[in-house]
Image 1: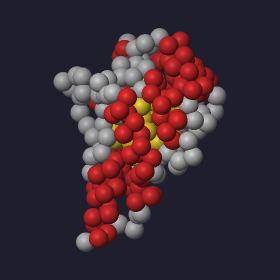
Image 2 (image 1 turned 45 degrees about the vertical axis):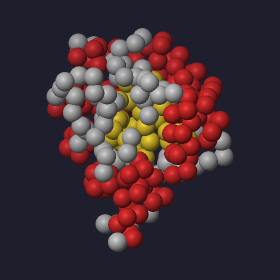
Image 3 (image 1 turned 90 degrees about the horizontal axis):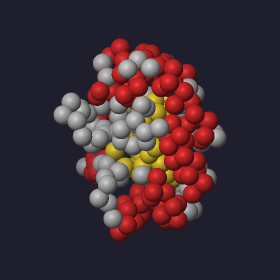
Length: 232
């Protein structure tokens, strides 16, 4: 079970800092730590992309720009604008994580939802795109429908959640969510789980299910837990 290396598990992690009260010093420290641990990316708000790009030049760590975060209900043109701006001001391999328009989805305006996603995918011009469908706000059938819409729109990844805790009904993402999404779209896309993965045990469980990325604020303790097991 523990033949995975620190470097390998770090390559699954989008180390995340999206809180609105982060200072420049906070972000500098966060990005520098992520670089030292060689996480796959740092997941940040678009306004921090230039700062992170400067600190990550020449490193193994890239950037995820969180577009339409956290509600997804902004206009398509706003999401497209954030996408284009992030690419223009970021590292060459910057990625885009966009939030699906959940209000339109709940209104069963599925064509508009798919078009919203597709326009961001097109604006990304080949950069990796992930769509956050926010599973805590959906029932099982809606999770399948949202996954199909995202896959049809051409995304690279379906992502479970923002991890945003602004609603009483928000819950952690689970391995069962990944299994449900996979039952709808199979291997046509990759998978990212976010909002609830805080331990090495949880990380290994979802990796075994085929998850390619883990969005978490707990990347460092996850990696350090692996080191502790190796030492013991």
